[in-house]
Each structure stands twice: as C-alpha cells, then as structure tokens.
Length: 282
Image (cartoon, rainbow, N blue to C red):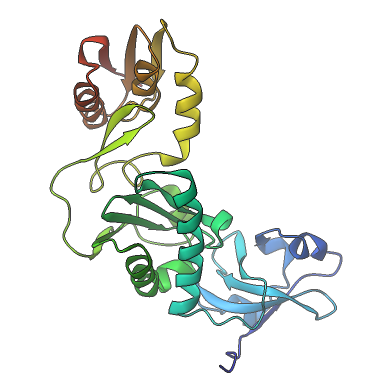
C-alpha cells in the first residue's frame, strides 16, 4: 500500500529530539515551528514530525488548539492509520488484559501506554465505553468503534465525552451510543472481592475507575479489623474493597448522592450492607 502524503511539522532548533526518539509521546506547542501553515492544520490531522535537521522522527496527530500540539501515533512516519492499524493496537491491548484478568471487566486501553494517545477504553463485559480525549481519535471514532467491536466481540459501544481533557482539546461534551443499545441499569462489576455498580450512562468518566483497581487491592490488604473512612469515594472504590479485606466497617463520603446510592447498592450486593454507611459531603 502506498503511504499517504502527510504534511510535515518540525521541531525548533535546540529542542530535545532525543526524547521523541527514545519514546516521549508528546510534543508541546513551544517545541514546534508554528508557522501559518502549521497553525492552519485541522485538529486531528496526521503529520510527519521532523527534527530541526529535517530528519523524520514519527507520525503524529496534530492539534494546533492544544498545548499538546503533537501526539506520537506511530514511530513509522509512513504508517497508514486505517481499520487494520486500529485492530492491531486493540488486539495487542486485549492480549495483555487476557493475561491479567479472568473476566472481561477492565481498562482495555490506557491511552499512550497502549499506543492510542488520548484514548481510554473501559470494558464492562459485552459493553465497551470509549473516551476519545484527543482530536484525532474524535475524528476517527467510527473506525475505532468498529475495531473495538471486531476484536473484542462486544455488542454495545458507548462514547463518553465528559471530562476536562476533552475541553483542553477543543472537543464537545456530547456522549452518544456508537453501537447497540444504551444500557438501562447500572452494570455489576466483580472486583477485589466486592461487587461494584457502574453507571455507564450518567456516572463519572466511564462509570468506574478501573485504573484504581491495584490501589483498592493494596488498601484491602491493610484493612483487616479496621474502621475505614473512604473520602471522595465515588461508588465505594476503597470502602468496598476494604470490607472485602476484612474491615469492621466502612464509611464512604462523596458529594454525589447518585454515586453514594450506587455504593450502597454495591455493598448490599457484596453482602456488606450491615457494615457499610454513607455520608454526603464535600
């Protein structure tokens, strides 16, 4: 396949090109030659990043409206970003999760760490929730959705457009159903010996902070016979894990009444109802 003809953006003289060569994923606006041509690129455009001596470094996604003006998408400056490219990234991420988790409830893609800069994808069994927090991912959300569905086999894909990161990229906050039917009730997630209730439609972020799972597990290991206070608890992340770890009691405090109700439902589903309480506050 013939490589696309990408525009070129260039590092300023004396900018540390070595960082990009050794794996740095971002290029900031003050590191680039921002001439009229570069500034006129549409957010999400792919471009070849060159050093100050015009040597290609990587293929980047450009957003002239963001402080992170270039996100490294591929180390190959001639890479073709198509459905097969997306599927290879998703498949690699899926293979890693399959080694870690017995059930399909996890963070499937964690942005730059999985080669999809600015993209978070959480999996809840047959449902995937995508947060495209970078302009290039928003622009190609259809291909991304298709790749996720084909590789994982999920039947429902939701787009979550909440969060400050999208605003910094100049993106809207309109969430939508990309494939399948919107879930009508919170999804039960078994994690660290407890049952969590994830609201994938109206909850914070994707509905659950999967990235905190190891921290919840660590706290649970310290909780035997303890009285636990979980502040800014959301749906009971640390509190429910602590109860699963043998805590005497757990009090969860959060500013969201809806999140606390989900925490209470999770405590009951886990069999911890008698040892669990909530308090609304900030």
